[in-house]
Image (cartoon, rainbow, N blue to C red; front, top):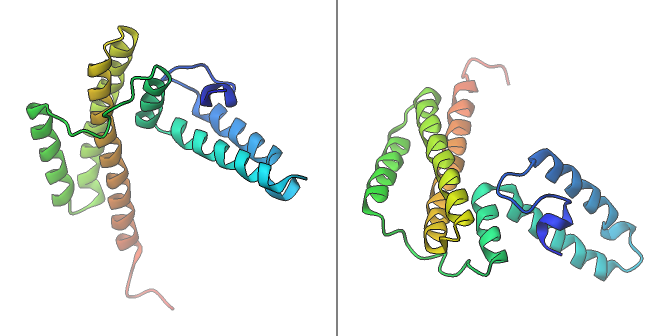
Length: 171
């Protein structure tokens, strides 16, 4: 049984994340080690459920998993060779490093989401056309931008935490 089947989802890049989470919670409750007679087996099943959930939760890992189902997921850890992409990626990283407020991150977040959306469209085309090398390259790029988006979220949290700190607050 593949991860999609485990969660009663179609084998596709576009999935309903609410359904994924709902099915995950049902399965976790069903196979929770504290409720099982065979705790060792329940731990193994629970671990498999967690791993499957993690793989399908993010578009980059979901795309990589789709490639693995087609036995086309090799060399995903290679570096990106697209010079223009690397230039753009470097500029975005610099913008993130130079951000001084949560507002600075808002436009960057929009730009990164546009990149992700474009790469998702590219992946779908490459996957449907069985252009495996291009699909693998797109997964590498998706991984980069999903990581950048995570870093933006962390930076936003830091700025929001800093803004909520006030020396005049009573302790």
